[in-house]
Length: 373
Image (cartoon, rainbow, N blue to C red; front, side, top):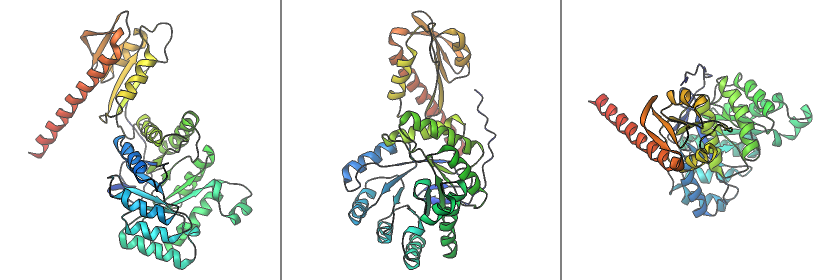
């Protein structure tokens, strides 16, 4: 399958959120955010661990109070993924979670308070070697900027961002990333384009408050896809009004579609028509759900008839082309003697995919050992 990506990444400095590098030549990381009450420690830990199993690189947690900060201390002890604390207004919360081991602070220096309070937060970040994310949203621009521009515009978002950047620059702090998000796709795209020419720090991409799973995924794919295809962006979060696991799935799907980063199975499936010899839609839905745990990149084609089925199967890791009663099965582009019984196609394909993963894992392990020796 054609997989070459000619995307040239924007040059950016590199920071680290815990063990995850962001910017420079680092892979584009996928983030999500908990939607549990932070003081409900058990629920928050469960959600983070689920996101970890899906491969999330970084998780953000809202810390609206000192009680939430104390809960964060216990949450941090129970998870492995790097955590970002989302903080507004109260600088003391930032100081507290920094002490408790947070890996990044999401703040806007301008709304933390006086210059002295901002300095305390920045000095704390320096002491604990914690980066900061400046997060600008079109829905919460400063009053004077709203009055100046009349409405959110790319220039307005970037002016707000640069105002916060300048605060950090004056404090000799450059370990930060910046986002300029909007629920308006084109506004967000043009804002990031403009900002990318003004700073060298990593850019955190997102279409904020994108909506439900369907509409939000479409908006995010268009907005983030445009930016990523132009080489803009170092980390991303898909913001859906849904279970945070959907954020992660869609985020990886966007990167996978652009051949920027592969994780898990890329299902190639037809939209179906009267030629289909088995129920393609239910087969794909079932396999996507059953195989969420697989992180090995591979292409699996599931086509309901031979019109496109043979061609897709020949360029996939595994493929099935629909035929009456029993369908043709391909592995590494080669047609196999064994055929797949259409009445039991889901179980059979799951078994074959898992068997292939084991083979690929073993091959990778063997190659790694040969390189070491």
